Image (spheres, rainbow, N blue to C red):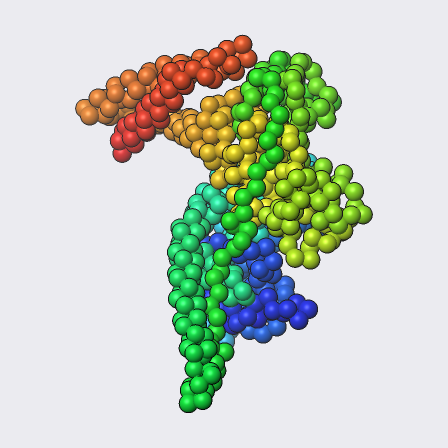
Length: 630
């Protein structure tokens, strides 16, 4: 058990934590939440031992191993991906050396009944248990499994790490943390640089992880999937909830309502006492009584409501001018960088008012196609934008184009018009610029702060096509909610590149899947898409497994034979249904048909029903296959 014992921390005379305490038991996975600046990252560093608290201490068991993933890289290695990841094995190698040293001491000890000899044996046993818990026997296999789970392919293993982007370098750091199999992992925004597929893999890994975890993340779906406890840092103390993030939000809302009721009741009591003070103050025989009431009122500790004004803010994009019906049309579009093909033969239409998501592994061309649409990259084929179009484009690199000499407030105020002139501070607060931060010069802002400023500026301009490339990377939960609601109410067209499932949930009508040089549209939001992909991948995996056992299981008779007949029958139904769904998908990808089919309610209902039927058949197939296996 790890214990945070009465931790206090001050920075520049300001208290960050005040007597903060909680315990972490084996197997607990904690989501650490709180406003920006509450001290979440600082707390991880105190637990790790990188920061020393002003008072209090961290109590850990003997030989307690911690793994830590920071938000930022300290430096970039020139070693290959594989060699850099193998650095994680140094802990194992050091432990093996310690065991060898202990064995040598045993060999030179002759008094086998002495306490010293028994102490050496106990030490050897402890070290061996540690080594076994790290999975030393299968370390090389685990390296490959973890790297591939995080999105690396076999051909990437020998490439120098410094030839990869910062996001991929962070994946190697995450792999190194996971590979030492620590007693606790401290993860600061682990999903920021992962695509959806890698996030799902990490979820599965952490769900099976036997140790503890403290996770800072603004990815609500991720927290719900992997945590079983939530700790909120509020005013320097810890509020503990014994469940994952979404349930915590419900309980948190109930707490706020109780606080409001208590505050309202207290205010009513104070007003009653103040009325009595006014009533008795002027009476000589009641003056002493009035003074007593005054002292009583002064002694009352006023209740506060832990509510957040930002959470209730609502902002909307300006009403956009009406564009033509077809906003983006791609015909046989292709893009390569030198000999490296990104995508080819891309055909699609995006219509006025549609909201679509670009998803897929990193490096598959989502950002590249976004830049092609925004006319920031050349390409092959025909990519046409519709009439009367005003395009607003958000990407991380755009933050560098903002002039640096003005303050944050001046930069936004200069762009604001009409009613927004009175809401500039509120808008900046929604994007986490609060208090004196609005007076910072743009040139001193961090990359994340500049990105948030670009988003705030985008909400001031009346565009009718928005392209948003990873807009949530530097936002907290509340800011993401504000942005999502603004997009939901936006009447123009939106293309969103994102790996944030909670943000995308219910936001888009179609998902464009980027995979192995192709772009394939799917009807529905991100959850519909993930359900379809999960069904496909699960059945593909189970089919391979069952096929490898077919020669043995064919010897079974009786009930097995009947089950196999049913299994074959379901497989034929699945194949027919998949062919029909594929045919309908092909029609949807045909720009000539899409405009008509997108508004054909009967067609869309048939499509959705077939997807549901396929899910059901896949479940039946898996159930039967399990029975045969047993």
